[in-house]
Image (tube, rainbow over all chains, first blue to last red; front, side, top):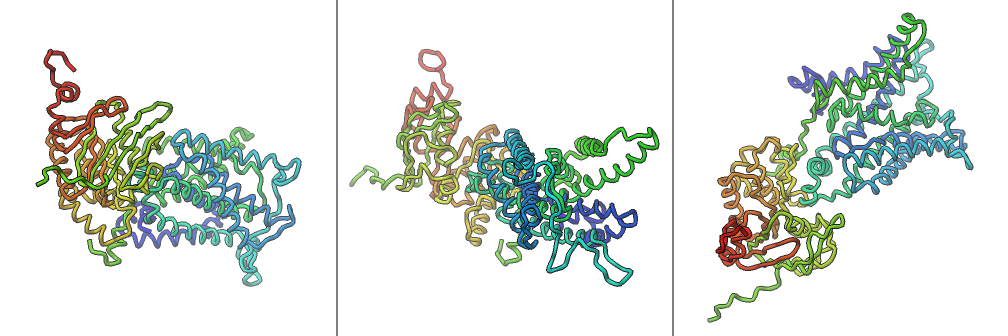
Length: 366
Length: 253
């Protein structure tokens, strides 16, 4: 949690305890503030949390293990389509969500291992190219697997996915408390996603200081030396790919149920690049960095979109720059500014991997 | 009284006709080599003779094209690197190979990655600290900020934390000032005196031959000479080829 506190600029260093509480309060209050500007903004926050989860997963692969992955969104796609296959009228299957989500995660993890095996010997640029290809292959498959047997319904995508239902509680319906007071479904999703993100953060922070986390850090710094001190680099790389993919799969499953609709165009190369940008922008190898990067780079383009479209219409009478183009422009701009001003990312990683504190606590003398 | 040294039991390490090739080039063309328990042996030769390749293959970082490696009487030629380390073979790689973004202490502790005996690890850490006082002063520092000599010390300390029986050292003197090299070899001597068998790869033949009891000379993938350290130090061929001396005729070797 200490690292998370460092995300708060001034308070984080002086009083991490207070910074932590501030983060919790902001996280809980965010949609209540956002709704003052309109419900769309709560929706933006919901998506921001999904991006946080993606960034956390990709950070595991790129930041912790040092394996550059340009096709990460493929695992998001695998998760989303698994949810679509198991809980929609497309195949007429309607499994409950607590089965769908683990299966989505499992399928994504399997896809991660499938990608991992052939790229074990690759590094750097070559690894990036192959993973990029993998991401495109998955998207193209989704686009074309509607003939001769219709599996993915092609470019039209799959409609009317079952909403998230937790213990008989449908998150897609507004929660009626009294006759004139109800909690909008967008809020319900927000807090559920927030819980998922919080769980992921706890898991990943423990992972980082575990044996596995330290071995990844060693492998990232010097693979040969890591082998020489007895690290099984093959298994650890596969673990990184599959664990990272699991987060993508979970996020994908949530996305499918939330959006109620999946289509191949949501999983383009640009999405992979956007998630990678979030990780790099925030600070690679750093949980807090990935979170901040994802929040900023997913919310900012939305703000820009809502400003730019009306602005262009009043100025030129027509929309010259498509919002999607603006988003990519913004991501590139963010990258350039970061490289110039803060090359190590917004929150540079300064993680400690050793178990010294842990050992002390357990009474092993030093 | 028998003045001959007692015939030692099976050697700790034996290379039998080892050939190693990578990316189509045969770097090691069939070598035989033996190390007895507690011995200090060096492998000297010019750049590109195949010394590092041999060392990496013993550590399991490179596959053998042909031949076999016997360690403690067992064939280990097909064993992956992490299993060889668990059996007691530790490598200090060329160029040190420390983990630059981890702290010094984390680097040392990573050396004990495959061990589970917490108390034993702590005891070994203390031993390494007394052996390398400079390192102890810098435990919390990020390892990438250490000087070259300190990094080399750290790499040696890290290897010791795996509690090796056989320590493979790849050019520990590389790029270091003579005074520092001297200190490093002092440390290595005390490691050897504790009973660790050492195989040293060096370009600095003088240094290596003074340090080790026996040595092998490697030339373009083959072993061309072997003998005791003092023997090779006085061998005219070695003196001209590796010690930079001018031979009797006055030409450079």
